[in-house]
Image 1 (cartoon, rainbow, N blue to C red):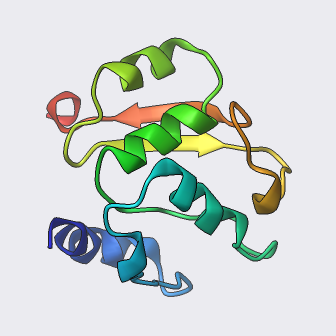
Image 2 (image 1 turned 90 degrees about the horizontal axis):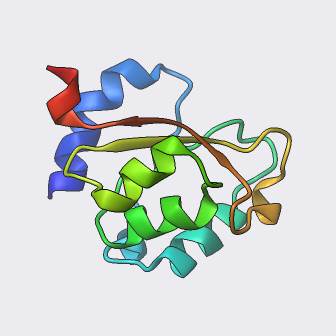
Length: 113
């Protein structure tokens, strides 16, 4: 329910070109299952936003993010409505692996005030 509510609130800012897929099979998924889903993305997809629940989402972000100052913050807590932004350069979705991305931003509600 909360994931859908989040989507409803941000959908207008995604633009008309955004494809939205709701995948019930990902509800409560582990980081391994979420990574498997990312591996299946088409090469043409420039970016993806995954809206989900913990611990899977936090575990996935921690798996993919290389060491850095933002990663330490992410380890402490991934609060409700947190947004971790990772960049993978030219890496294909199927090649995502542990520490293959850079955590370029980690927004949490209390710091947006």
